[in-house]
Structure formats: structure tokens, C-alpha cells
Image 1 (tube, helix red, strand yellow):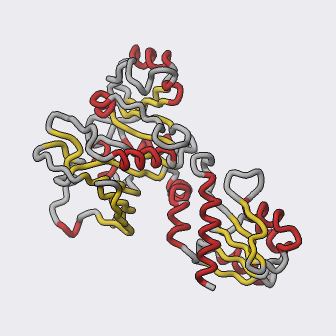
Image 2 (cartoon, rainbow, N blue to C red; image 1 turned 90 degrees about the horizontal axis):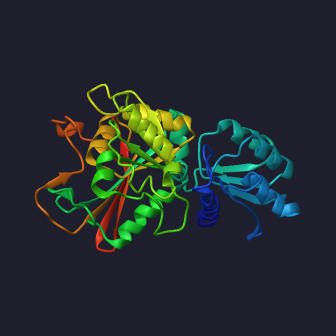
Image 3 (cartoon, rainbow, N blue to C red; image 1 turned 45 degrees about the vertical axis):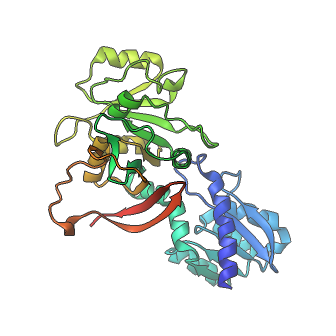
Length: 353
């Protein structure tokens, strides 16, 4: 039974993933109705109806006595429809909704919760973080050499990782609402910050630039790109430059400075993005932003491509975090690694004490 439950739950997860890059401020959900070993209805994220209702509609009369699989506990509207259709059993990936479980069981429906719980939780980790904190879920992605450098001493970083790792970076861009870099990255690499190596829509481009040093010729502003570019700055920036960038089509957002010194307050920036219904942000450097976010305990996921290269002196990904005792080191609540081309990909969810 457990093997069959996991098989159908994987199907529900795949249906939920159809909403990636399309839904904002909403969880990703999928549903499958099964009767006598046959899938009778499916419902995916991003459809006109809630996934559970869509699956039940497609199942028709076969919804009665069926088993319905969904990665999330259904909202009230879907719950009412479930009770009305009287499936024999509901299998849910998440845990913790005692009220929903109680209502279904009182209606004579068997409930099994926690099937593939970790996978279902990670599927909606962005939404859950946003709903709990009001700020976006933050993923930091970078490539480094075996000796821990993200660039040479002269600042050269293209390309440390392999083409396969670059495609992974573009897949991550598709999966996030916004992509965040610092002005140092823009000045050094002049990136486009678009999705090109995989299919999907471009995220909102966000540049942290406390003094508005970004040149009007930067590729994040060229050829219409400025309309999807937000430049976060501070009150010390030049007003004339702000007007020039606005005239190009970019949005200039003035935020408070960091309490510890010059530069942007990253927590204020994330809160401002959250108010715009940006539920997830991919950070692609540089070291200053990564260090600031980690010191502020604002990074949720870390994805690192470790390339089999050694360069000696160079730029490190993290600056001083003022950690002097190993017992204070930042650790991970879950992590996995895999080989991708010649690189090794580390993917971990950070645990803050």
C-alpha cells in the first residue's frame, strides 16, 4: 500500500509543479483521484479550479469510494466537495491540519497524512516561508573552486562551473519570482539575468546599488529589460541619476541604510519585495550580499556548484561572520549532493540556532 501511495503522490507532486513560475502568493497543489487501480481524475496547479475539485470533477461518478491523493490539505471549498463526493480515503503529503482530518473522518473518510512529507514540504517551502515571515524565501546560488573561491584575485569568475551547472542556474531562475545581485556583479560581469538555457519566464531583476553606480548601458537595462528591473538604493544616491534610470523604464526603490554601516538594509529590501507578492528570491552574488544575508539570518537554501579547479588566492563567497567557536557554526537541517558534469552540487536548507 505504501509503495502505491508514494507512486500516486509523486503524480500529485508533478501536477503541482505545473504552477512553478506561474503562481504568486499561492501554494503549489496537485491532486489525483484513483479507483480500482485506475487514475480517474487529475487536477493541477494553475488551473481554473482548485486541483482537488478538478480531479473530482473529472472522476465523475468514480469519485465515490475512490482514493484522492494531494500534496496539501485542501482549503474549505475543496473540503466541502470532498465530503460531498464521499471518497473512501484521502492521502495527504503534509501533516498538521487536525480540523480538516477530523471533518473528513467524521464524514466517514479515512485519512492518511505524511506520505512523502519532506518532498511535499520542500515543494511549498517558498510559500510557507512567505506566509510565515512576510518575506520571500531566499536561495543563494554560486559556483566555487575546490579551494573555495568564487573569482580570481583580479575578479574573473566566468566560468568557474561547467555548462551543466549553468543550466541548473537557469532552472533555478525559472523557479524563483526574482533574481538579486549587487552592483559589484553588474559592474564586473554585466549579466543579463534572464532565462536562456532552459524554457521559462524571466524573473524580476533586482540590483542592490546604494549609490546608483549602475551605468545606463548595463544589459539589465538594455533592449527593454529595464521594465522588469528594480534598482534598490538609499537616500544618499544622486537624485538626477535616479530620474535618468526611471526615464529608461527601471524602477528605483529607496530604502534605509544598513544599521551596521554603509550599504542597503537587506532585511528592508526583502520585506519590500514581500509586500509586492514576491515569494521567492534567487541570489547570485556577490560576496558582500551573501555575507550580509547570512549574517541577518535571511538565507533559507544554499546551492553551491563546486568545480574541480584550484586557483589559490581569490575571492571567497563569505566574509567575516564573526564566528570564533565551531559550536556557533551555521549548519543545515537537510542537505544533499550530486555530481553534475564535472562539478559537485551541494544543496542544503540552512538551520539557524
